[in-house]
Length: 335
Image (cartoon, rainbow, N blue to C red):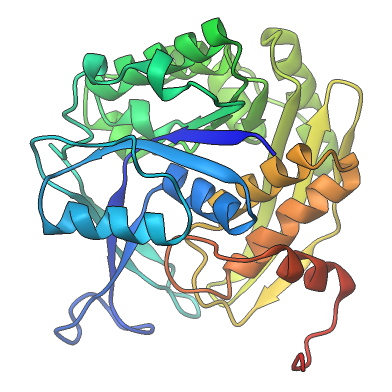
């Protein structure tokens, strides 16, 4: 099946129980978090060989994060123990017309402060046949930017395909003297798979795309393919949030030859939507690895992003049988 290697920060997520406000009661639920960690966790649950390259502090928090990832089947041997702190974020789950709110506390984490030369990419990418990272790592600051660029340059030199999730975080980029367009353009120039929509392409190319729905997305995809010669696949979701408890989501995938967009899935009774984009990326990578046709790849991404809304915490933890059950439909008790 090959080996997926991802690079990104491992964090801890703190959330009030249920739909409470932050510290409404003196209790927080804790999950291991991080976009890239979420992707390889779900891929490991689908029986892929996965590894995560990251850094955590040498303390009990770092130990707990590593143990949790290892428990899901992720190879954690490339997680370094470096000076600094554990990154956190606080997520207050929305309800009704109150949206979910996220508060970051990740400055000067062990990962964010790690110098770019902390990573020996020739060794870390040995045996990999896909390298995955996101726009969050370069958004953390100059160290993250330099490390991400060095990583994709090494992957290209070693012949390892790169998948990149835009994951644009304006608050992180705005916290330092950054140039997100130039940085993201450099990173995506090494990728053959991009997770992003027409807004991401607009940021990269400085263009706006007219029309609506599928036509606008196809126009943006064609512009991205023209600008990035290595790019072969662009995948994204379209979300309409009626309120915090009812969303409508469709999945789209574009190649240079054609595109396909699924019907909308109506998601009600949402437990937790954070991590749904990472679940989608996992589904697309899983479908591509299995050699599925374009329509089924898109539906696989839709299945996992939809299912993630039913699960608390950051990571999607589903098996192939859950994807198959989504395809088959029916929501009665399975006996």
